[in-house]
Image (tube, rainbow, N blue to C red; front, side, top):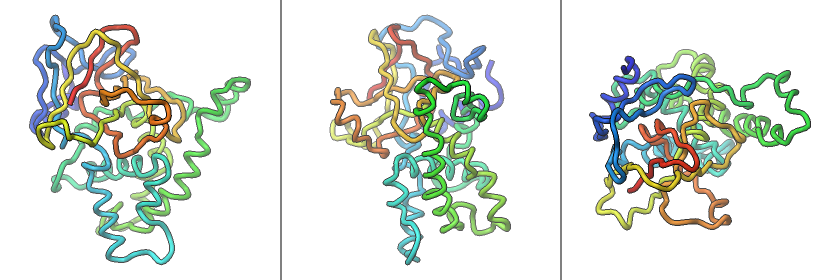
Length: 295
């Protein structure tokens, strides 16, 4: 049975144009967190749910970039950072967008445009991956190559060099014009652990969704998911958050139907990375009959 957070998410999902088959149930799975469970048999090519593109959370659907560019047009910094500087450094802009949307959903109430508050409500708030281990715990990894892949120091350098200074440069965007204590709001919604948390959420739950819709009937083409005989391809985004895996084991699905070469994959465009509500509730197992997404 769905709890309050799950019911709020489902209400938000359907009220914003999403559709889900009644044979599916969103619920907690022991030892795995939340996931979608089939209540009855599902045939191949049955549509399980569909998601309007407006519901995706990415750099195109979020209002952060427009707000930052407008602020820079109004008062271009003689010194300091521009939005493009943040965007050009790995996942900095993407993670900052998630933090901003989380702050916005938590503090702004009913605002114009899409808000993802109920979606954040069912995301994991803690991770048990090495990115969050103590120094003593990390010492146990000595002699392995895992330590080099965590990249915590690199992520924190990006945060200190690009993300935190940009937030402090435009406080009216990131904490609001009515915030009486800038430092307190930043420490609550934009602190370094939140940066790691949102980066881990992207790493473990995001999808590659191409922006090119030339093959679609309209820009509002829904994304649909159905069972497939082939295994879901894991397309782990590359970034500064290391090789983390969400303890909920939610699979990432590459929604680009065309195979890409290794060189093309290395030229990752962060604008193609999306958080896809409901789709990240699918658990996948290599070699099994999983679900594929089409748009």
